[in-house]
Amino acid sequence: MVNSDTSTVGIVGAGAMGRGIAQVAATGGCNVLLYDARSEATTEAINFIGGMLDRAVEKGRMTSENADAAKARLTGADDLAAFAETDVVIEAVSEDIELKAKVFSALEQATRPDCILASNTSSLSITRLAASCDHPERVAGFHFFNPVPLMPLVEVIAGIRTDQEVIDKLVALGEIMGRTPVRVADAPGFLVNQVGRGYTLEATNLVAEGVADFAAVDRIMRDAAGFRMGPFELLDLTALDVTHPATVEIYEQSYHEPRFRPAMLMGQRMQAGLLGRKTHQGHYTYLDGKQQKPEEPDAPAFEGGTFWVEPGEDCAALQEIVRASGAELDEGDRPGADSFILITPLGTDASTHAAQAGLDPERTVAVDPLFGFAGRRTAMKTIVTRPDVMRKTHAMLASDATPVTPIQDSPGFVAQRIVAMITAIGAGVAQNRIATPDDIDRAVKLGLNYP
Ligand code: NAD
Image (cartoon, rainbow, N blue to C red; front, side, top):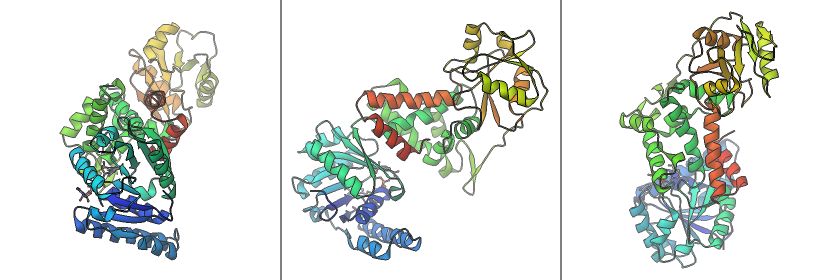
């Protein structure tokens, strides 16, 4: 039975994740037994959690009575024999399938037959882990995010042979622990880590193709698309020696699903030791832990010009920008002989779009309409746009002080491509019945902080 008054939760592994899970379980009202192969690790974790609860009291987020009660519910265990009466055990040892299989085998001996055995693994198959157990139906994934007390999401993962009742009980336990649980079927990267591939992989591919540089992609994704962090800032934070191997693992486990194909550039940069913040050099340089932002080049000075905007949904808004800049607006049905041409393609590159519309590609510049023109404007050349056309268009678009990022031709600019990749992977998760559309939205907002 899982309820906060009676549940006893065992946790194996008192590292970064185990201690966070122990904290939210104890705060939620569960009795918690914490075990680590290194007994000092258990003591350190219990002291650490005590410190976190004291801080919560100081900051007024918790009463001292509740903090004391949570501390009293937390006990260190000397060995797994102490887990004989636990209702649920959450395994959070290092990410190694052989090690986890050994721990699960020991847990099968140490616990009651109706005790649920859950793993916090980020990347290993729950089905495979369960297959090494005598009773795979009581094995599930219970995937928390780091740092646990601040990350409200938990993925509850059913392996092929997991009992539905086990999943229901873990969902209830997740709620007791103050988390938002989502139900996920076992799949490479589960839900969040699968969808998260899209952001960093497509961004790296864009740079490898020469469409834009790291800083330009980050600026577009933050200012135009509204993401909290650019993909390369994020990669520097998580570190390439974590993200790249995880991507390779998801690609292998999915039998080479093309959407998860690892980016060669990411692998090379990892091999070069450009791991991110922790090595002080990633896609950015870090001095005393502070990111050194490359300066954004100034927009060219306004030179006027006559601009014609291709008819369509975003025509009026772009025409308004042209008028407001003081440049001349060509209102003809087709562009005049000397007019510069503005197009707003969705999903196609500027060169193809201009060719299909019978527009002079040397005078054409595409502007990304997908997220509107307010935060940042992306100006994309065709393969033959004249430099003076690109310069004057950039200046006109920047005349109201909205930043503009010029890029090379690419089907879907930068933001369209990256968001389309994330969406395609999310749709695949739904289509493959890994999670429901509602849970996908919830998980991506809470687990990845996407807008
Ligand atoms: P960690 O290295 O901080 O902690 C692992 C702990 O397990 C250590 O204290 C170690 O002494 C202990 N341990 C090793 N073998 C043991 C055994 N046989 N019995 C008992 N304890 C043992 O690792 P972590 O970052 O807390 O990760 C733990 C698990 O959580 C991994 O499966 C990882 O993939 C997953 N995870 C990690 C994160 C993250 O961001 N760190 C996020 C989600 C999930």
